[in-house]
Length: 486
Image (cartoon, rainbow, N blue to C red; front, side, top):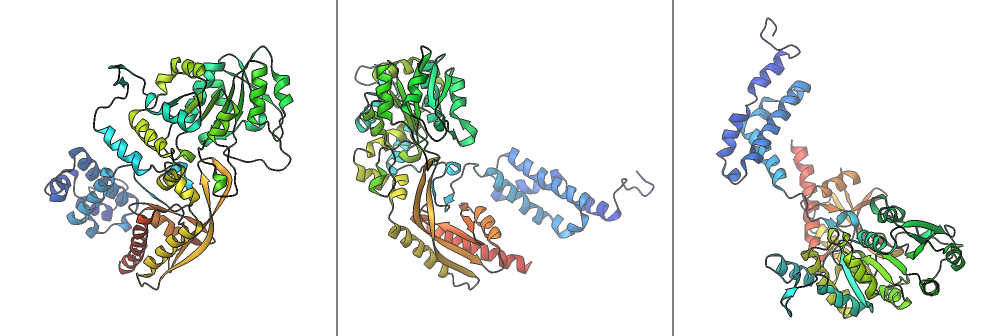
């Protein structure tokens, strides 16, 4: 201490502010008497109080000009504690409004579940179930029996099982069928999916030996034929659902690969990636191979995702010949990669909707958004514009704009869906500021910025979300007024 009684490096102003800053115990005592904080766990409340006191102490030491005595009053500090408590008590995983126009948005949880799937999950989640119990025999059963019959019925496959995602399905199949053996794959099909997760890496982890054939843009049947040796264990085709090569290209059709496999007594596997039961060419110009196509072509194993284009929960679906599926089930990895009961419930309900294509498209949100006619999207956009203009604030400008939506989720990279967006401009606010405000709304509203305008694509916005968006924009305006007042 110096002769004046001050700590070294702290001036008189800082010393005075530090004395006025209440201690943790004092602020805790006040907080515990506040009725709105009565249900807050003590650990959360204590942490919030400590954070508020620490933040102000740091500001006093680093930037004392930013602190006034009013900011250190008990009511003001208690208000800050409540804000931190609210943040700490809020669930980390929260719904967001997807106004990006990307239908299967990986960052936002991919596919929305159908109402029927949600109802079944709720019914299974708070009761015991026959997950692995055969009600007919009274003995232990297989969890896959809940969906195997449905998968075979819809796809035409002879046997089926499911695991927790498609990467796991590919890993499990390769480990079972080709561990220590060569797997022949076209060089142009060695895709990388989200999170830098590559087919060669999955293959290496499975113990299979990758053998590339062909060129990046062209692979022929003779490339596979020349590569077959006594060490070959599997011929594999990977559908490039997350990118497209155009121009001077060539790939081997699955049925030709199957014929080659039969000639050499080798199994053939196709990883469809997204996978779809619906022929999208009925609803647009793009033709995407269906799961049924792969089964009809005679592939011994077919794998694909339960979410993405299927519109169900995250899962890895494996279809194939009964003897191969039986071996896969016996693999010790199967237990580590197995699907849980809630995912299984959601998948079963989603699959049941596919028994009738019209019902599936009407009920499964992903299919509904992908096939939604532009007229319906325009109607939503006009409704939102009207709601926004009803505020009557001249600073807020909403306009309708032609945009393009995407399938997303590493699926249908060449599918461009015509869409309609609502563009927002607010006087005295940049597009970046609007985007940030909307992203911090409760619930968050995620759009995109184009040409200095904040856009919200109506193809991926649900009808009941329109009033929420309009209210959020009103809140943005109120924020400007509050800042002006202060």
